[in-house]
Image (tube, rainbow, N blue to C red; front, side):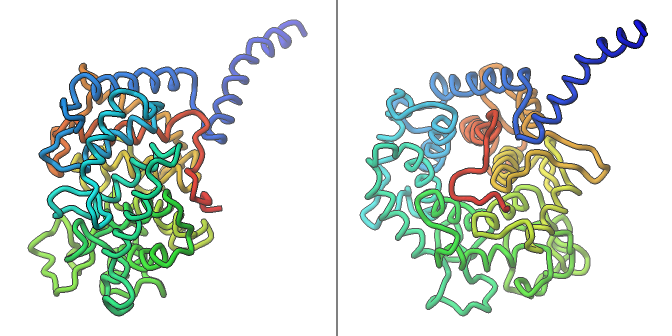
Length: 387
């Protein structure tokens, strides 16, 4: 009897730890160890932006345009910095210098949609006292006017509802997802006409044949993931085998698939929708925190951002992979980014594609990713968590 009692007492700490771990996963929280590591690496990242990343004029890597400044400031604001912090205050003043009479917030105009959308996200984070209300109202009108919609092209055109870097020309999944988030965060709801137009384009960027996607690419891959752009012209798969399958399908990849998940939830789709079910299957089959599925290390830090934003927006606190293993994605992302952080507190990608070898850009994306990992973080305002 005594032996049994001793055994039970010895097992109690283990059982408590097990129950605590299960509760943490269910509630989207993280362990004390992971929380401490999160605070440590975020603090180091913010210190890098303050001491080495920001130029005297308040910008971050100005040669890349104002978008990078907006991303760095958003990363800081989402991790506890306030508008009164010297780095943020100086950065906001610099970003304000890019506000144009047409309502856009951009540099030379080549990236006017992208730069305006990420600037909207930044100004919204800093808008607690309403100082940017007028700026955001005009910016919303500006980016909505860049979208391919009614009056600009018929709905059966595969580009309908999308938007590209500069507005005119080929639309893409990334810019369209930034448009959706910028509009949602600044006051739109899922029924907004611009959001629903964008959903048409987003649905056509998914490898999932349905009444929502009848493009020539819809049934070629059928893995539920998303790709970057929809070609209008006839394609030759042999010229880009890394992008196309031999039968002319477009390969899905990580950053776009999580951007697609996030965008669909923002647009009002629930977990019962077959489009959401399809991309959640893709998440199960391709879960990773050490590479951008389908792209390797290319665009890795942008992937971390869409990964965290997509899972948090969809209300997924735990992911079960194809082998049946359960993952507390927040904890695993924290630990992965901790391993990748440089001594000076920055992050950088050795793969220079999409400019991620720039420390300011990679650090901005890393900090934005980590903002979704804070204990108890729920789906952001404006999303229904796909319920």
